[in-house]
Length: 104
Image (tube, rainbow, N blue to C red):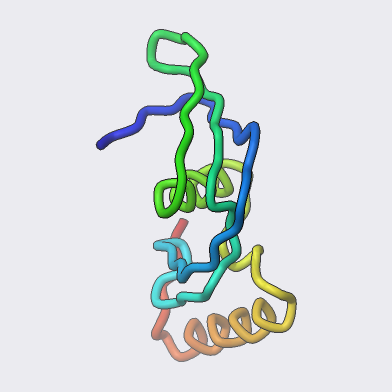
């Protein structure tokens, strides 16, 4: 299914899930990220009408991940500081070795 959401906003969340995430903005890197298991979103459709969507499980994770992007947040920003520091060092090393292309 394709969702076309204008100005999506998470208005409620419940539960918790832990799952592996990756991102084209950080290619080749994957880490477990905690997210809400259920979310309710408020958004506008293409006609400018406001509506809500409820999602759970993987779809809830996808919505949270993509809305984070709209707010300038990457999945690595959700990691504990020691994991984030290790990942940043790995990315810097890969860039220096020419084994990494920065995107996004």
